[in-house]
Image: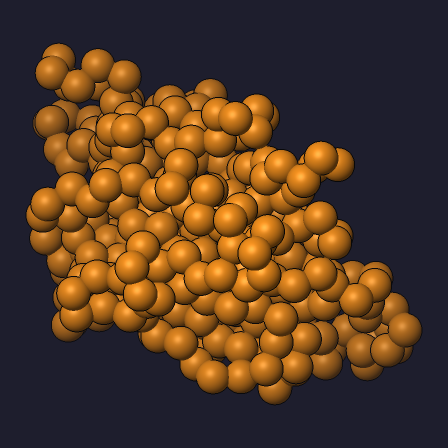
Length: 315
């Protein structure tokens, strides 16, 4: 079952995990109703986006912290999807380390910037400070995995997708092929899905170029056309179906990296909730996010979905 950690605290977010035996989440399909119109929109998008779960898939981890950093308007939420024999333990280790490490690094960066530039400049560079903090902490957490004697992060790893929301600013950091999708409303009240992240697959031009420059190989298996995987130079291993991951040290010298892509978005009154979806490693999927009637994962996509829902921001 998906592991759910929900730290109590103030803030405009509410988090719901897919209800499963032994796991956390709202009753039924995990869709909560907050107002009739919003409730219908949430159920509709979740019905179209929530895929069936493949048996044997590594359980993922969700971490949510309201009142992040003792700030009422700030929240952290992340999903960590393991793969490989030790993937569950790698995901658990990253989930336990990243949120607090990020908070400490971010607070240090803000304190230093305030001494240099003054308090008035902090709001102007908040994203830059958080982005650099994410990059620093992702590298540090990955090194911790390498040194750990409690788990094997050589042939196992995890994705790391997280969101920090402060006021109307949403910062998304993504490692791997988990996915963040924003549900927003159009003028006629329909719910439209907007993908906030890139699926870091090995066949993306910039990802493939980096892997090949490091003597890694990218190709599909004969019985899996369209599913591109990363292989070491002289043998058919490990076949990782993503180009960025925490752990997976067997391919870290061959172009797979743990650095997140960090992006920002200002939310508006139209924006309703964010869905964090954990994909199954190696499953080819399509996502049509530009058309409101086609906002769906392909039926072959397997995984977990968690939902962050937020009220209209006060701007």
